[in-house]
Length: 218
Image (tube, rainbow, N blue to C red):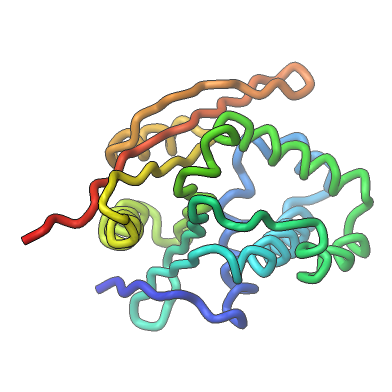
């Protein structure tokens, strides 16, 4: 049985590696991945990038892991409405300067630009919404409906409990057709499709929204 909890800071490095492997083959990273001579080098850097990102958000965001028999099989990062923005200073406090030992500033800025483009369509409503910033399942556990369980058994009930009595807006985005189908299947509505153009290649960029009811009053 999957149990959900907030991970400890010391677990973020392992979660970052899981995230890098899970998202490493996403189309939005193809251009950046081509900067590396081999996949292992790319995953190593992405693991470090994810680790910095997770540490920077750890204090101000809600983190969840799905665990079974002592193994973390899924995780999610949820950003609250009107939460404090993570600053450049926060990233440096979380070790961003160390990334320059593994990649040039040009490469890192390219990655940042790619990620900013993906967030574009939800940027206008994210301040008043819950944002599913990240949801990942260990690649070795795919096909077990762990992403669906994380949403329906953990994240959505959590948002509902935080409600002050009104509906809560919940948004997210993806760059893959597979995940598009996943979010639609799990009750989200697509509200924007703004493809990203990168060197003659078109990358899908879908944004989704869900309205979550407050808890029922018995």
